[in-house]
Length: 256
Image 1 (cartoon, helix red, strand yellow):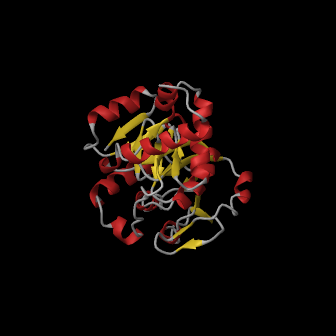
Image 2 (cartoon, helix red, strand yellow):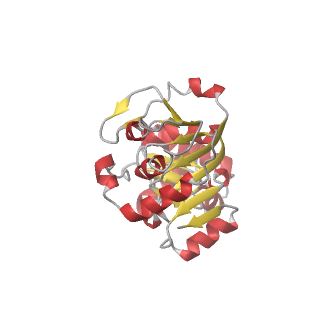
Image 3 (tube, one colour):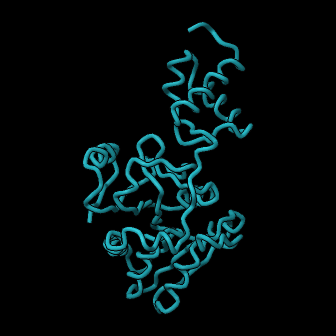
C-alpha cells in the first residue's frame, strides 16, 4: 500500500469500521505500516468527531449502539441462571468485606443472597440493590451519589465517587452486556461504562457475573480489560471454546 496522508489514512480506517463493524488497533497498524500509537491517535480523532466509538483494542461504528433494556425487562431474562450465579457469587463474600455491586440484574441476585452475612458493606449504584438489602441487618449499604437513570434504576454520574476513596474494597461484582478477549467487559450504555471503569479500578478483586448469552458479544463501550478480571461466574451453557481462551488469559471461570 502506498504511503497515505493522515487524512487519507483516517478516511480508509473509517471505511473499514463501517464495512466490518469493528476494527482492531493491531490489525490496522500492520495494514497501514504505522505504529499502534499512531492508529490509536487516528481512532481518537475519529471518535472526537463522533464518527466512531472507541472500544478496548479498537473501534466500532458510532451507529452501533444497542438499546438499553430496563431493569424490569432484564429481570425476566435467564432467571434461573442468574439465581445460580448470584448464589455462587455471594459465597465469595466473607463477613467483614466491603464490596461493590453494580446495577445489573445479576448483582441484584447476589444481593438477595447476602442477608445472612455480617459486617458487610455494599457499595452500589443500583437502587434496586439498595432496596433489596433494606432488611439485611448485617449489611451496611452505601449508595453512590449522582443522577438517577430511571429505566435502569441506576445512578450514572461519576461525581459521587470521591467519597469511596476512603474505603478498602475487597471485591467488586460487575454484570456486562458482553465479554471478549479483545474488548474485555462491555456495556451497551456509555454512561454505565463510564461509572464502572473507576469502580473496577478501586477493587482488589474484580468478579464478572453474567450468563452464557453474554459470551462473545460486544457492547458499545468497554469498562474493564480481561487482565483486570480475576473471576467470571457464569452458567454451564457458556461456549466451551471461548471459556477455554479466557481461562488461558489467566481468568478463573466458574460455571454453575
